[in-house]
Amino acid sequence: MIHKGTIVLGTMIGVGIGILLAPEKGKDTRDKLKKEGLKIKDQITDDFAEVKEDLSKTAQSGKEKFKEEFKDFRSKASIKTEQAITFLEKQLAILKEKNKTFQQTS
Image: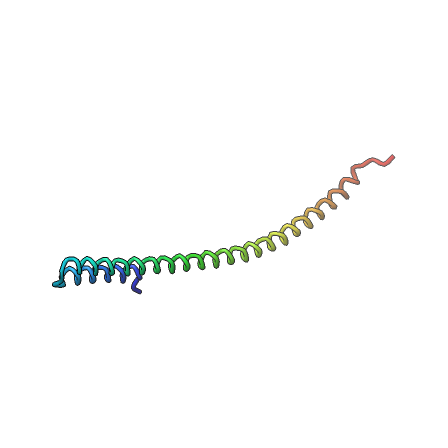
């Protein structure tokens, strides 16, 4: 896959060589260079805007994926916490029963 930057660079080089080799007056050549420079600037600006938009979309997609994964993690952690509490409650009940045998009744 050819990157946009490569295409822009190739275009700039081709235009520069073509203009420099063209048999025209200096003013005409400078005007053409200026016009082509503005076109290239606009193209680069458009390309960067497109890249920025793509990155923004990717970041948003990653953000949404992170939120979903965090929600799943939070749910699983809550279930595991509940299981741990249940286990501790059972162990506490066992300890209470054992402790009753050590208490003296008057």
